[in-house]
Image (tube, rainbow, N blue to C red; front, side):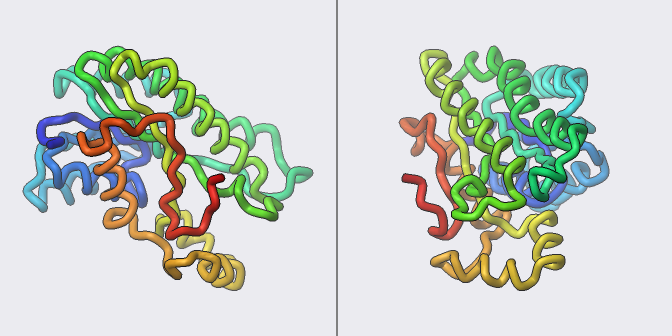
Length: 251
């Protein structure tokens, strides 16, 4: 039921973004894979082609740069004639204790996170509203940790994205636009790097997941996003959904 739709996905060159791109393409969605490293995005498009998927194009885009966002949306609409799905997945963060935070790092985290998310939603709004659209933003369960030490900036930027998502759902529902947030656990390159550098903490982390595993970028996260974009989820909007094997309590 998604065949022929058009999706713009940021951070689509690897990890969760790539997994979402592959899952949507499997359903006939034309994908625009955008990211800072063009070669990685081209690899995502190559994987789609190898699976006999629909047309997919790669675009170099640094979401922290306003001009890049405008150019990417314009190129998407010019190439495919419209836009139905926006996935804000690109991320940057500044881990560590609050007293160690440097202004430049924090500003970058927020530019790539909530500021870019808001700007892309604004730019895509007229195209999403034309035929009805779906926005999927990436958040995190970091703010749900009982001990948020060293995750303050990351949690703050992701909580801001949750707030923007809820506002978009509230304001743009009349425009036939749905907006939802997912809070995923998946074996992205960033998480694998964290596991390698923090093996004991990572092992303890996995033990807190009821399903006792970290999700797969495509099979777990991508497939769920595809379902959330589909007609079977037409009445779901404004929600923050943890796709994390049952770890977080969202109440």
